[in-house]
Amino acid sequence: MAETTPSWNRGRVQVYTGDGKGKTTAAFGLALRAAGRGLKVFVAQFAKGRESGEVLAAERFADLITVSRFGKNTFIRGEPDHRDRDEAQRGMRIVRDILAEGAYPLVILDEINIATHYGLVSVEDLLDAIERRARNVEVVLTGRNADPRVLAVADLVTDMRAVKHYFTQETPAREGIEE
Image 1 (cartoon, helix red, strand yellow):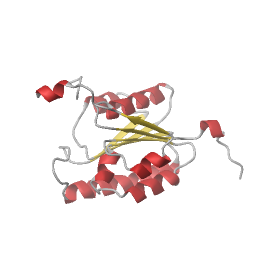
Image 2: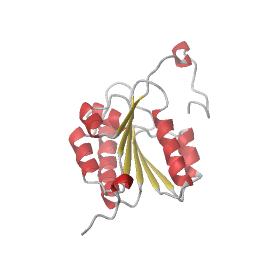
Image 3: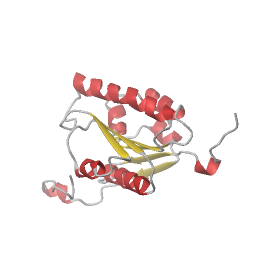
Image 4: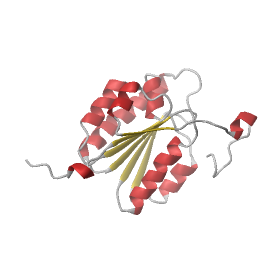
């Protein structure tokens, strides 16, 4: 069967990593852009279970943006426990199918780099799911500590670097700005 997706329009792999702020927000900005053009978006949040401004905004586009959370209500502090692993594994099974089906032209795996860093999901499973995705699917991977093997397969890598941030002054997160 002949390839129907032109090479210039194939799905690519994007990575937003680094110790700076804005990785998730950048990915949700892309989700908003895609939804604005009528594309369906699936967002899988790994290691995150709590509400955020990005998720609340995405709910306003529920006909195009689906957000599923695979984590507890608190972000991982210290070492992950069995619940963190169970949730991440459940998420990876769902994501594998979604990537292969191709019904969502944009799939965002938010904090997947953290999930692989902590061993909640193996890098090999992630790379296999990316390799087996439908040709039209754009994949965005966010989170600190992106594995070098993930960076190697990426078409775009953005390293968010912390230069200056008022969090160092112990300023709490503000609703609508940081969360």
